[in-house]
Image (tube, rainbow, N blue to C red):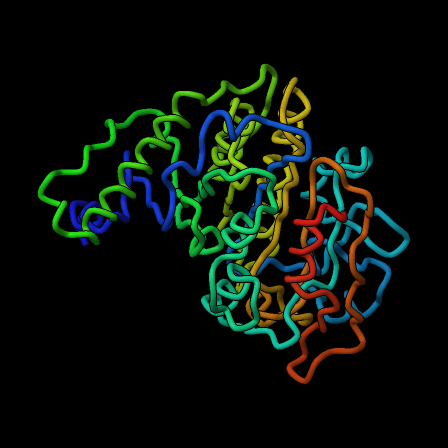
Length: 369
């Protein structure tokens, strides 16, 4: 489909930004969006492909871990507790752990897990085992869970259905969208007799106005911020600038791809986790340099984990339970959930989850972390 066709359908906004939403006029205004007590920002980062939780947060004292992974077991992890350790590539996050700005979510997954990337991604986006329904972030915005109505922003290359299906405006943006763009076009008179076309054009115009406002208010990076110039780093830089603006969006969705490590996992996974840790540590340092901002929570998840046993290609195949990371402000509990038993697997040989994603979502939205 060509760009002009997307424009006609109202699916492409100013600067090429993908948009969705059903009621946007009057939704977001400078007066309504000022940072007030009780308001916050949630940054949701998806590790696309199925992150290997076992080699991220490692049960380093369990002999079954090394028995199942004679080649892939991490030899020199960074101990956090008597039983758990971090992959050494996550060393930049040690400072966050020591300052109580990092929590680990253990045993996370669906009771009837899917090994399909597409179905699992839909489950996480909707917050439902069926994978059906509006996005969990869009639904939370409609229910007033963020204290104020704002657009929902996705900065990754592919976006996420988690911000779609509600009444709030959902925008998939890039740095280019916020650097330049054309003014939103007026609704042509020829659309007056076509309610559907008129509504689509109004949606495009509202999206254009919102992007223009975001562009105008985009703040510079705090002095001294060191976020690496990687794909993920670029997203986090832009997220930090949005958070520093006078009208920060309440929801920012990000992504990092490459975690489908069926082969040659050791080096690939180390590079990905290193990029993740350096970017998150730099982002947290930037947050600390901001003089005025709302509380910020970063949630890092993946659509599923990997199998306990390594495969013949030096990798791991699709599994079930995995781990998630929480970073930022207001974290109280260092460990959420319980680590799955390596001696008690499901009939497919997968780790058995103990914490369902909807339960984690509720805790994040309630602020009970």
